Length: 156
Length: 264
Image 1 (cartoon, rainbow over the protein chains, first blue to last red):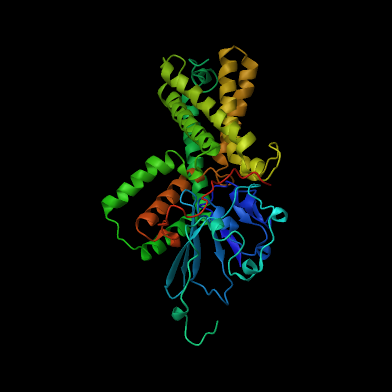
Image 2: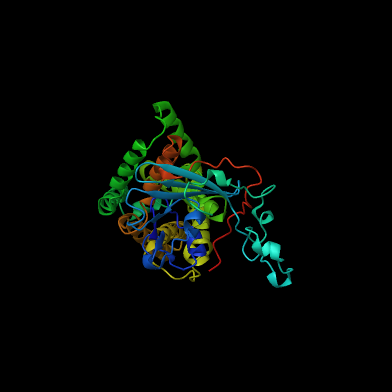
């Protein structure tokens, strides 16, 4: 639904103000802490949540698909190059994921696609995206899941 | 000037008891303002509710010794060095302002209560510390005000734009600056100017300590509490619902460093 800020955690550093693509994270004029000035315009990109060094920003989900009691929280560890996610359902179930940070430094490593060779038909038909797997900075090939493990009755 | 006890000169105008009474009044104003702030914002209620929730989600029951250890580590690291501000200029400026203010206030109290009269010999160490405290406060405070404030750094507002959130830092800077100016003019024999700066020093103290309800003065009480709660939540496994620390292979991700928030 939209982001909100835990005031006791925020120290008004401005990272969320800087990164918000909708320019709706601002600094409150009374207490100099971050505030979402237009919650309706927030599209939950989680940029500010990930950028916040103090884990002071959280997101409220829409009540129809994310009923009360759930939580989605993020921990960014730049020294390890990881973003960890913890999804907590209202029945108490928890799921934890760890993803690599793929963000590039500002203004650097912008691919010059016009100068790149056109992809051949094999690459177009491939499931891989541009620069995968090298761009993900992982050794070897992308992980795969065997079709035997798929849920029965689902066709692919 | 550094050997001058500016408060002893005050005895020519008012009795030491009046100055001591004023100091006690300022302490009372801080307590009253903080209490009103707590009642208005309900932040202490939120804090304890949050602590209760964290206790319910705890994966480990911490012993008293473990809790004490976490609290002591938080005091030594997070609070004493304002670690939440990361490694950067903001942290250095905050540490300068924080320790400058603490030294300035403690030595002010010592000068007022222990060496109140012109006849008493004030140890030079205390008067030097009073001046040094004020100077350090000014260095950290003006650095923050002119360059590091988020309004200037991340929101691109000019440094001279003043908002309500500036009440605390400006009043604190005014106290330190007018205090130094008062001491200097008193020492140099500029009587009229010293009276002017004395009046400004008293006014800025009234604004600083009397404006607790409207300013962010009380953050110096809330922030340590929040830091302790955060570290206790990490230690007992509740972690405010945050995921655990990643156990990732070395090649995971680019891990780029956060940049200064200045890409407005």
